[in-house]
Amino acid sequence: MGTAITNDDLEKARDHLLATAVAWFKRDVSVLGIFLGGSIPAERADAFSDIDLRIVVESEQHSQFLEKRREIPAQWPGFLFNEWLPNARHCVSHFRPFCKIDIFYYDAAMLMPSPWYRLPIGILHDPNGIIAGVVEQSAGLKFVVEADELDFSISKGLAAAHETYRRAKRGELFYAQTLLDELRYHIMEADDWLHDRSPETTVLAKFEKRASGMVLASLATSYCQCDGEAILASLSSLVSVYRNQVVALHEKFRLSRPQTNDLAALDVVA
Image (cartoon, rainbow, N blue to C red; front, top):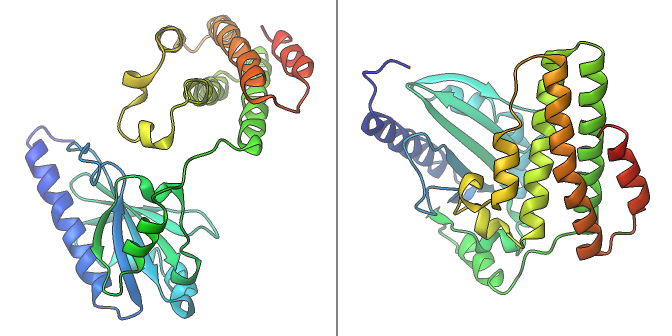
């Protein structure tokens, strides 16, 4: 990015992109609501923050919006490219000079109360009060860590540790580095669970500010050169941290998965 582009330029461009998107959707009578999530309504946005836009549409038109989710932003000024996944409800679009908008499409009939609607939300269009009603009904709901979330995260953390070891031993060093990052992610996730940080907490504080000191220090020192022995040394240090976390997760949440198996899996690559 050229140095001539200032933070003020980026914020103005983002505001213009948001205004363009809202105006485009509001003219469609099948759009029943528009709201913002993420850092902007939380008043934590900086010049590099993206736009998390949520579009509520009539059930009969929902599938059509999903089919056109890549075409819609491509019509707006400054469009560069899309990120998308097959069968997803959203599309992430990038614009000049350095703006990003993540647009989710919700079926109005499927819009149900959820603790997620207790997070900061900016309602931009709600002529029938649909969004306001769901937000009101969500006021007393709390985030609960589900057993499947824990089970999935631990399994993926163990797998990342094993694959890092395997790829480093085979000399697939670039791949091994990406797998170390995956393990770091599950370490961060475990740190949040062990310290009872809900999405309400995480949306307001970057991990560098909310993390426990030992985990933060371990993560910071785990980055290494693209060298097999260095990667294995980093893996060993991260596994030591993660092993303690896995034990604590088992104790705190009384997990049904065998703790001995989890620890044995980590000991293999320690």
